[in-house]
Length: 195
Image (cartoon, rainbow, N blue to C red):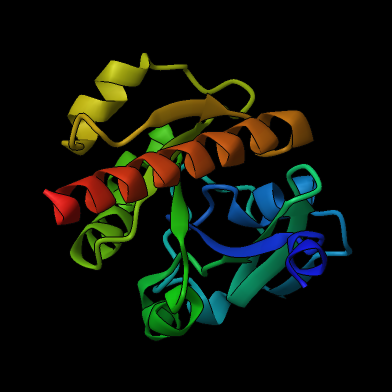
């Protein structure tokens, strides 16, 4: 029975959050082994007053519910990725999307870095381990990780990494870093509980 149980991979839920236009849909799609589920709709003039496209003027669609994808990390670990919508008006969905999540990626766009704060606050308040992945778009100035950490006022234990949300290898490294971070958080909590 134990050998049969060990042949099944562990399934883990990961949330991908961040501001409007940060690249969450792209990140999930870049790394997913399955056809990703996307709930994107065209931006219209009706949402112009609600959806601030300053800095992301070329954006023509927006996620209205979630993105979903899956990636295997080896034979023993499968990550189910749930991308959140970036606008505040869809914030009511976050509790459902984050329910049962082991960890989260906050995808940051340095052109609109302040848009990362709602995601960071959300995961800090719920004690969900997370990291910040700075999406390095073409033509966007790259900032040193420590400057981004300082600007976001992050706890020193929160990893900050650079990535390209379009590149599967880059996204996979982000997810591996997150899994390692979550394992470290769990070990520290277990050690504290035993002390």
